[in-house]
Figure (tube, rainbow, N blue to C red):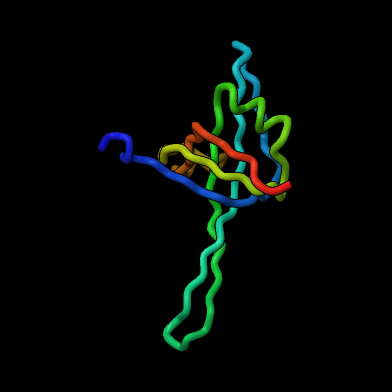
Length: 110
């Protein structure tokens, strides 16, 4: 049952090209966001479509795949876990963010 804890699977399209960061020790990290779509019918029977944006972090060997093959508009499938963190913005306000820490990535489409 542990394998099911904190597991996220998403299929979506990138909203912009990934941001690749290289650290002093040579390790890399990729950051990007993907959009997923959802639709439902409201109480009047009208179809309502919504887009959700998910922030994704990639580390390790998968960064090379992201760096070489993943671009804005590309459809991908990811699997990972949810993480939460807080930070202070430039005005000193505390902000909170939820990210998907990706451990598997699949390129979809052409």
